[in-house]
Image (cartoon, rainbow, N blue to C red):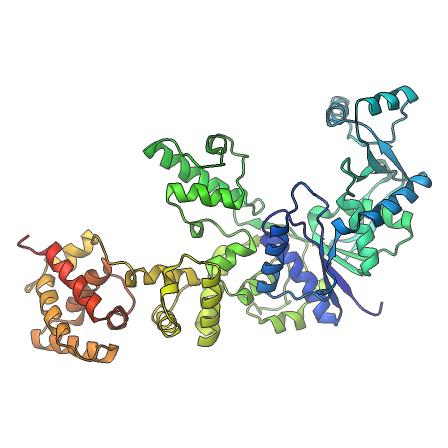
Length: 536
């Protein structure tokens, strides 16, 4: 085998799940490690659910996360290849290896029910229709599917991860659909044709496709194709068990929406059956529908668990951090190394280090990875990430900042986990407090002799006299105030924090006042003195 060729072949039916990103990453790493090729293919045969917007989202996500593909000028879309599939299906039918099947969904369900009653697995085999039955089906306007006739023999293959003799015995083989009633090929048929024509040598995909491989092998044998090497990747599970799913997001929205409804009454959202969503735990909302419901109940997307690539980008992770984390979901270096750059991942990746056990998506570990990555990243890299984060968060108040102000905010807010936290910690610069933390007021404003309120009045006079409004000058003035009164810095700084931020927490106080500006600082102090005056 002269060159390894891998592929990632998603269906554009919605947002790209992080599990798909892991699959794409492993395929990309194998190709890059061996000097091979990595191709992208759009499997859009589900015409009812595939959309161009999902295609655009897919391409955007893959570019952001860093998986470049080698067929950028010749991207394959299955929907554009229907004549190729039809020709091959016709040839299989002429050879007696495929046939039309006319059962309705209800009839198939009945056949499954009969098998269950007989306590045997349901395996579809060719039905012998009479001429009268065929005429009746056509008169009813039925449209047939086309099924591939599986030879009754065992189908086994050696998996690069799971080992030898994966597959099914002869008594488990059943005929399967290769063309649907709408004329489009099924995934099982198109994937085999496309892999062969693209010269794919290695197929890395999720373990849920393991048994599908037997059907694909049968088609490869019937069509005279070479068999690629298969590697089925371990399932990614949540720490508490179960697959990561968009349902996790819907579950949280449903809980919060019920709480809101109980407190405020009916939730009315244009184009969304909210009551059905609330009453049916299996009901799911599209992303746009989620946003509509959350807008009514006062919930933000950042409160949801990240599931899709776009979620992680919108939260403000570095793509290289996410890749580092995803690479360790089922693969290891064989030593204690965990922190790796993309180049290091490429150089160290190999199929023999992929494990068989399910991988756990440890969000605490990802948070730690992300925090440390930002701490060690060059300032210009963090700034670039911030500008990218702003591009997918158009409503962020940080859009009001110029480049120098953004750099200042990043420098002030050290120790953040994701870029969204920089915005959260910077809200005070854009919104004056309308209420004050009661415990902080009691501790830092009311107590002491002189009280925190008296220190704040003095600070107001000191700051009003500052002519050069920068961090160093402000700090010098406040420290001089402390020396004059004999008060510790905390006795003076905390009332200032409460005045400008509404509570006892802010970025470094002198940086905060410098960034806020003299006019806003004095205005907020005045408002606080008026609101919290002991004589009021």
